Length: 172
Image (tube, rainbow, N blue to C red; front, side, top):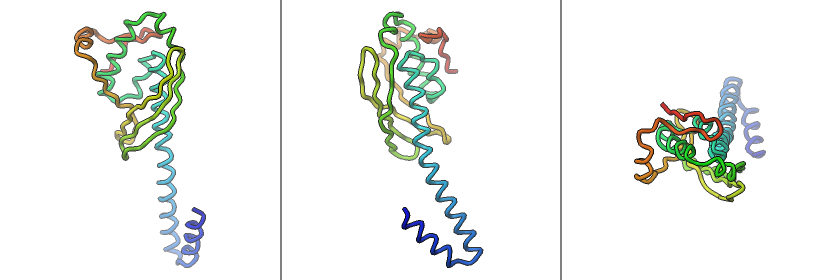
C-alpha cells in the first residue's frame, strides 16, 4: 500500500496543474470506494445483530425493521404466532440469549451470509443468516417454510404477540 502511494506521489509531481486536479479527483474516488467497502460489512453486521438480538430473546416485533417485506409477511408473522403460544416459563428458561457475529461472507454485491454464535441458558449454537441488499440497504432475508399443518393451524389469525410487549406483529 505504501509503495502504491509513493508511485502516485511521483506521478503527481510530474503532472501539470490540470492533471494534478484530475489525479486528485481519481484519488478521492478510490479512497471513497475503499471506505464504502468497509462500511458495507459494518452495515450488514449492524442489521444482523439487531435482528438476532431481538429474535433470540423472543422480541419478535423488534425484529421487524431488519427484515425484507416478504420475510415479515411470512416468517416473522409465523414466528410471532408461535411465540404467543409459548408459556412464560418456556421463554424465561431460554433468555437471556447472547449473539456474537463471527464473520460476514459476501457472495456478491447484494447477497451476504452472516455466521454467528448464539448462547442462551438452554442452547449453544453456531448458525448462518442470509442477508440481501436492496436499494443500498441491507436486510435479513430468511424465508422459513413451515409445515403445512402448522400454517393451517394459524390460518385466519391476525398476527401473534410479542412475548415481552404483547404487541401484535403486523407487517402490512
